[in-house]
Length: 358
Image 1: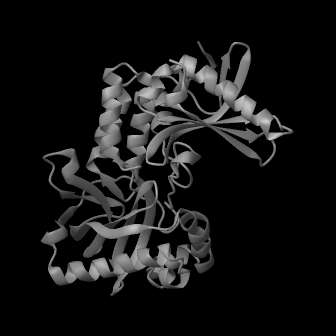
Image 2: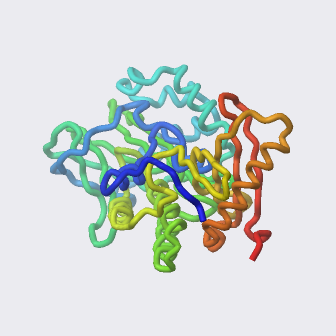
Image 3: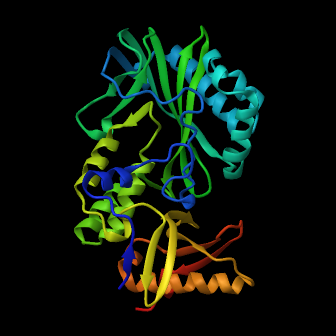
């Protein structure tokens, strides 16, 4: 068995750390490719009271207005994924341009979007037109039906008469993506805020991950359940201005579960087994070839030949399999990466669950 050494966060502090979302970088792990541009354009509003507003969704919106909104939103996203920074910048609102420079947008496209290309099946998945009667800065409105968590979203609104939130869906090789846009009339519709988040992993959505997490929890596979709940929570995230109804339900269940010792505290984790010590920087799921693997990144001392790094990785793989054998009920294998301490080198070792000793 492992002997885990870590800084333990107890009670709600542990849950808060477990549920945390890194909104400006990679979440779960680098493997998740969970890229978010939150706070880049408009800043994250504080959660505030609901405001007096009406919200029309999709076909409830008059056809001419819906088409105009969809045209602007799709045009902006197509500019992003075709790396046309000039066209994307032209679609921004004057307020957004005060916060985001043309050069910064070009850098975001080059560093965050181009590596994931090509994108396919780009389409408007949700359109919400909000009309505000009275309100305050940083208020929110509910759109849809509260009959089920899947039926509603909560959106940020400003105290202006009319605004829209649009979710554009897209697909890359292994992941689904959601471009969440907040549009304002300037007087023509312009993009005041946008965020890009992962919405599925090799075809599995937040709801799919949620269902898997529940099943693994019932099977008392606490490690798998914790990883899957975290993945579901992050796949349901659409930024601070657009909250899916299922997000709060997933987080409620996460707050009730007892975290396994492997995932308590904060990274880096120090794992010890049979005299070996591993400094684990992060751990989480990655989509590879249509399958979900578990990626673990460890930090090791500088190595000479790559064979040395591979040996370190294989030692971690062997000890991990002995400590958490149930991982193979969900994950197709392990991708263990060695990051060089104080350097930039990285070596990855792949181990398929099918080759694990029974």
